[in-house]
Image (cartoon, rainbow, N blue to C red; front, side, top):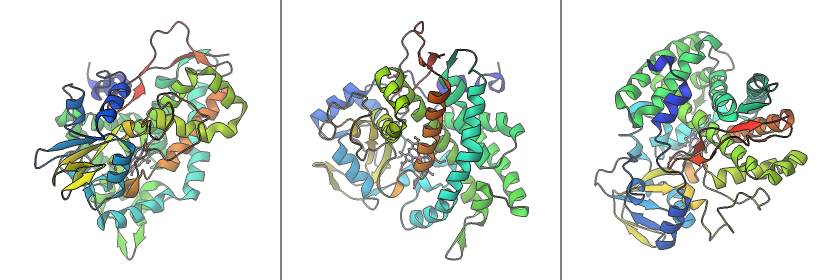
Length: 409
Ligand code: HEM
């Protein structure tokens, strides 16, 4: 069967190596207990053959930061810990995106992009896109009494939201979805990832030309006209950002809402508490992100020899920054392995920290709030399907359940 005909979720799920590690948290705790920073890449520390060189090291030297203190130190100091190592890796598919920039370029570019994520835009996206898209997804199964919340809700809705933010016609959605999935598959199939990158550039080229001629309120029009100190984004910079939006904005949000639903469904007392008192929603969202961060690892490169939480790291070394391990640091959270929405919220690392803190975090939180509210409002007596076997969150770098079979009503 050609990939065009396959279920996009299958293609996607097979491309992220998600089944290799089921629960990395005991090993994270062991590593953190031994030392806050380890020599070696995450795959080596887990002794599994995965390609986790998310950033390139010219010196061949790799470290992994596991404690909250080490992760915070690295992410806060963009001068000592550069993001440029993403260039020869992820830059191949995205182009020169904000992810691989350091200051002063990063600051300037981020200020321009931030214009697209205003409160006004957020309110409009919630009303015109997120709420109706989530409602349409739930309409399709609300009368059935059972559903797979991953396949039918959390996987499809964030990509539709991004497509809506870009003002893409509904007819383009299947093609856009397929290219987005193929772009992400770069980790296992470089040719396919590069091909999708080029096809997306051609596709966005046509969209950008249309918006320049006839600007609207959509994100492409905003990016085409954003201006700071007389400077505008070039076409290539816009394409790089648009390509980054797919994995950054759709894949992560699918995972965060799935993981929170999993936390609630496996702790029915907390699900009931949230259903009864929606003022707990903020805490629930932050606890879901802390407990099961969608992305457990990012990377930086040391621009000089430096001590990281007491461990010497040489110049040129790539440091894997383990957000998942930091979020379970027992020095910061009591009983960190437990999902507990009643916890006092504290800064966590799921959206990173410092200059590259996630640009879409308010959007991600809003999307998660809308989807969880809709699930609680529309699916009474929601519970995991008692006939389903072994529902669980899985993955080392990217984490989510592959399925969430539920019954309700
Ligand atoms: C729960 C959902 C999300 C999570 C967990 C998440 C996580 C992250 C993390 C960890 C980073 C830092 C990457 C690094 O520096 O190496 C990041 C950056 C970024 N995220 Fe998110 N993200 C989420 C949703 C979104 C959404 C919805 C959007 C936009 C639509 C978005 C856009 C971005 C962008 C543009 C950056 C780059 C910021 C910069 O380099 O200055 N993210 N995100």
